[in-house]
Amino acid sequence: MKIAFIILAHKNPEQLGRLIGRLNSKDSAFYLHIDKKARMSEFTNELSKLNISANITMLPRVNSYWGGAGIIRATLHGLEKVLLDSKCNRIVLLSGQDYPIKPLKYIYDFFEINEEKNFIPYFKLPDDIWPDGLNRINNYYFRLLGKTYISPPVSDPIHVLSKLFYKIAQIRFRKPRVFPEGLQPYGGFQFWKITSIAAKEIMEFIYKRPDYLKFHKYTHCVDELFFQTILLNSKNELLQNSFINDDLTYIDWRQNKSNPEILGVSDYEELKMSKDLFARKFDVRIDSEILDMIDLQILQVESMLSLPSTTLSQR
Image 1 (spheres, one colour):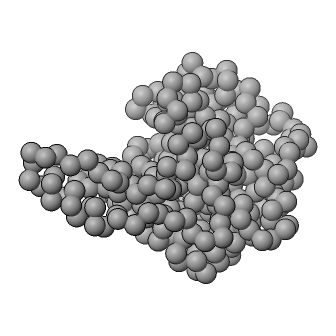
Image 2 (spheres, helix red, strand yellow):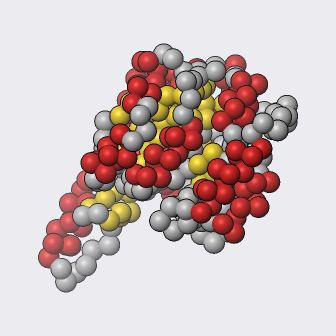
């Protein structure tokens, strides 16, 4: 089992270095995307301390605004490069604020046992989980001067530039959006752990259906439905039977359904009891002690952990 970790990062270089160091092994490969808005020199300096440069591939940098299509482009760059290297049979998508909460051997053994399974959260749209889910694809979302707008925009009758922008937007976005033909939209969450077979399915679909990628230029939070829709519409029966509706990641949504909570020391017991392999979000500038506690716990129990047979239900 060889695992490719595609990691999307935009801040906290020292935290990214710590994550890579924790996941590094002779069977690990890292494909890193550093947001184009970030200061690359800070990440370069941090990564130079790892002394594992042979396992790291830097991906082309794009502006990856929250919820925007740049995140998709960054992820596709990662998938394309992983498949070209042809070394890894498991691909794990992480952010720079994820962290493993199980020993590396446990993670590898888990994927070895489930080598044909694809772990990706999904639900058919519309769904009560996202009451406004179809709005993401029925309306135009676009960025201007760092802000996100929804079409039709509201015009300020006083401001001349606003009135001009409103008229241009009315012309540009006059046609109703029509979802790409022959596809049932699916939603889910951004991060997944898929096989190389699923990755090939995604890339082959992109090459065959350029209209799909073009359509999502104006989709809101496109990273939470782009890959689910491709995979869950696949005609490959073996692939269809491989999906596990789980991303194997512990996330705390208690306070804010738009953004997960930053995990800290107070979450330690929950993390220790979790059956997930990873957790997010962490931020060393807010609470670095929690990562020290996780590391200590992992080191203490690594030799005692036995891997149970998976009880996850298939699609």
